[in-house]
Amino acid sequence: MRIPFILALSTFAFCFGLHAVVWRIFKPQRYLLWLPSVFFGTPVIGWLVFVIGFEIALPDCGYCTIILTSALYIPLVICYTGGYAGIVEYSPSAEILRVVSDYPNGIAPSDLCVSSLNESALTGKRLRHLQLNQLIVSKGDGLFLTGRGLQSTRVCKIYRRVFGIKEEASG
Image: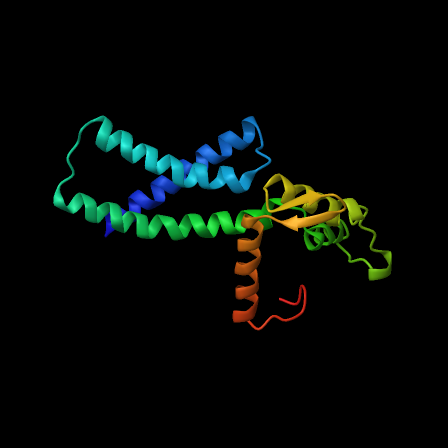
């Protein structure tokens, strides 16, 4: 079990490094496409090059190792990619924390001024992001869900139902 664990972590570390390099060279606007490509495409291509390119026959335990490694690697990548948006996207809560951190002796709520909490940052950026990632489209004067947007919305609704979250942003 130690080998699949080491392989899963080293594969994740390699892909994370590749992710950091790609984002340093150019920051992809459609990270919903790029993250899975880096974290799932790279190991698949690497495995195909290793096994098919070098014509290496895996021993019987080789396939078991690949399955166990995948069983450890895939949840790790899903957790990382799922949390990525929460780290890199604009967050009103994070902005409030950033401003409050500038006041080591505290700040009165009435004195709290967060200049980035504006309509463009709160709604505009999110709309552009959703359109760029093809979750919504603009037609005429309206916004409409794409197939991908509908699937994402269904998953969110199911998740909210499972945890009994009825009101918007009450989670």
